[in-house]
Length: 198
View 1 (cartoon, rainbow, N blue to C red):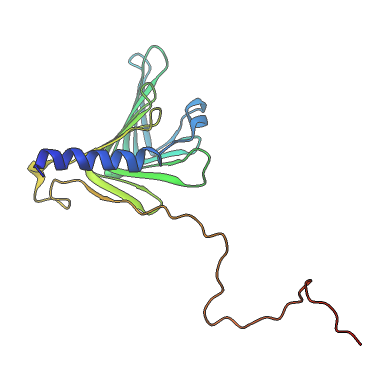
View 2: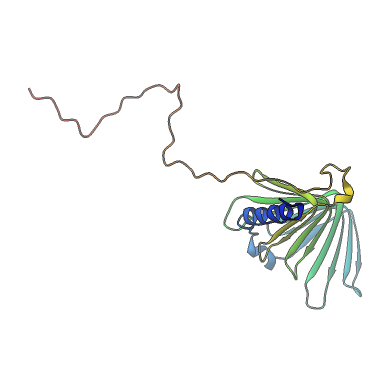
């Protein structure tokens, strides 16, 4: 198998495994964005706000924590957020589920127009026990397309410039749970047994 074919096969496997798993809470996109920080600089003319110092951004179930967040807004009202930290973190509840998707990177870019989240530099995304790491991870909350890429020039880093993925098997719940091996026996009445004849 050639290296380029292996890379394509891995990308296809990651897409199939993750595309059905990651579906962000759709109601979040219609909720207001709240920000807290130690300091803020607001430039109304350029529609830019810079938040610094223990910054926390929330929008519904979405939460971003960072050292610094630069938030810009275009003429149509769409927002673009660039969060930086060591690392910055992203967390959002998944649609019709109690599970959350978590992501980390030294830079996180969140775009409300394109409904995308990009994680850069030591990027990592986790959902339940599944875990993917790379140099750049891009996720579309609208199309549920998930892409991960490494950076071969960073062969001395923690991931050695490659994509690492751990995807757990999704087993079905058994219909009945077997009793533990050392559990005591219990006596129960049976409706099928008849009374003894006198």
